[in-house]
Length: 50
Image (cartoon, rainbow, N blue to C red; front, side, top):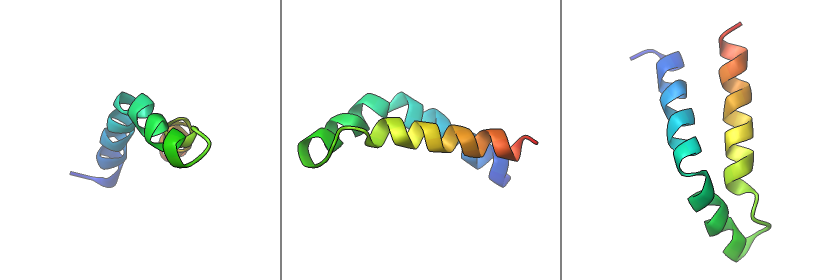
């Protein structure tokens, strides 16, 4: 499996778990961890497709 496919799989998993990750962060932080992970990995995904 190449790195691009691995990153694409990570994006899918993070998107699927965005609410859960955000809820975990709500307890100890500012409730944006899931959202920020999705945003960051989507940007990585865009960049690797160029």
